[in-house]
Image 1 (tube, rainbow, N blue to C red):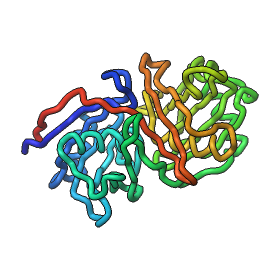
Image 2 (image 1 turned 45 degrees about the vertical axis):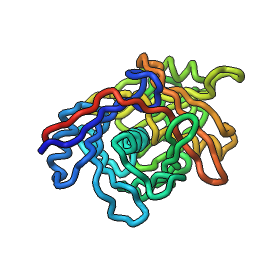
Image 3 (image 1 turned 90 degrees about the vertical axis):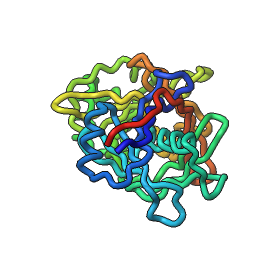
Image 4 (image 1 turned 90 degrees about the horizontal axis):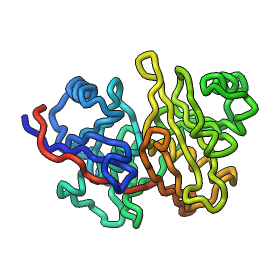
Length: 275
């Protein structure tokens, strides 16, 4: 069956400088096995499938797959799927916000001057990281324990552990070995810089380590941590992907207790796929 398809680049206004996402805009009738096989074939960090919603308040439902498993939530697939759905003619029930249904529940997405933005979902796990694990993380990153200023669980679905280094330069200098957990690293830029923070995301994959170019879920959970502890004030602008030759830009804002994470998305490929 021929199905509408788009490949988009998220967290960038310039094609090929963000994080790519494959979107199958009609996943109705596909089995989990078929979705997983196609996601493995695209060889991207995530592939999504748009389906009719099952919740009355949702505009559409999305299933999110990595090359090997399904995720309940991920940030750049949320923004990229919403962009593709709107571009394909999707009309939200309420123009103030698009409501996406996913494994983590309902996620609100709204239009902003900086592109689409999603409301950060509640953390599944937060709080301090045990000292033995912090020491282990330092070893994985190839740095001394004293170079980690703080560490906290920042899991909103993918399972992130986040560590804070002294500055963005230290984040960009990292050359980690093989990691065995989903690890996010953040460091501040000097005051007056164009960016406020630099982030990097490292994940285990097939016995090695992969670095995600720009990670919405990590930026969301790290933002909640930094804002709660007073290490950041909103709005702020984070960069990610610099070490990979990308130029991801993530806009973080807050309204009351809600943290919004957004950025630009551009369509690079559109057409149809046989599934």
